[in-house]
Image (cartoon, rainbow, N blue to C red; front, side, top):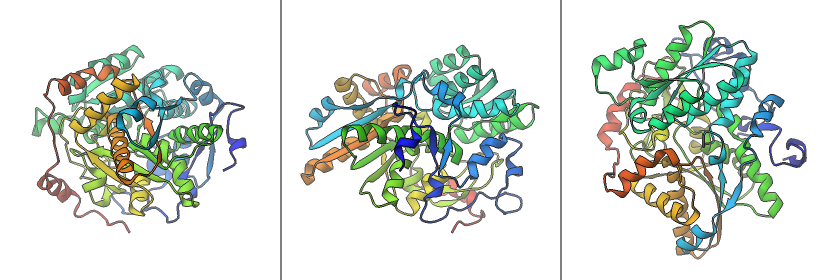
Length: 454
């Protein structure tokens, strides 16, 4: 990697995003048009995305320049700190050095602005007037709201209803930045009304909210759709995290043995890990671990299949690990990890053995998160707790094996406005939930007739 050419002056901020597609040892399955079964072309995506993002979705270039207008916004919080968790190391009493990339320092408190700012910029220069999107826990919705405000765009966010009710302060953040936040399923779209007709008490899901946001975008002139995870261009933007970490480690002469991130749709996990996946492809010895909830075990229990990204089947068919597009997960507090599918890039990497996946229940994750808060001070987001639980597991293995390890994980966001979830944990109201096989089998029946990926 030509490090000196890709960073901003003496800072760790990269001038370019890294595209893993240029280095994959085996090609990915293309997205398919659901009507024709043929690979999707740029014209098929033009109704929902601006052309610069469509080009980034398919580009074979290894390095994609970051526009100066985006770098200017990144400077508000980037480079994010690479910190060593010495107090947590002592509590774990294992031969490990634990480092974390603190993405909670961004204005909305998570990694999501890395792509939100880029997407808002490209839409602005393409003539878009309004962006429509969905959000699970609210991290993405708040990040896009901030980014739209920066570039003078209107924004409408469909927030999964259970998170809308559990996390009112996320909604208030969106409204403070000038966006409209609507609980999903709603009565303002056909997709939402169809869900409510079948289940008036539906807690919602990301698949439902995506359907509503896409419908809203394609039926209103001047509007486009914006996605906070899953797609190639989103993961591309997030690689600033891993690239910064590599430069910061280089300065102190350290290289990780294990890289960890929580995984819902794949954005923050890919952001920290894809530059290290490149290293692994080119011979470096590094393990890369994705951590997900046992209540939504996409990578650990779902099949690799072609599936839709939403319940209304409006997206292209994506080759990914999936629990079925009509899967509605339990109302766990880690709302950002409640997605039925996994990013095609992340799915491909697991399929060819370049990464690993682990699943943890919410008791394990909150136990890890509270230990972290009581030693390192920062209160993690419930999603981030899944990564910390994986760190605890790796430390235990190191202790049992008597081997020293350097562990890097992505602290994807803080939990200051997720405190009701901590209250539920500390008062004993959280429960262990492992998704039963019959629920997986039911959801997968919906994709039996889809094309089969290679």
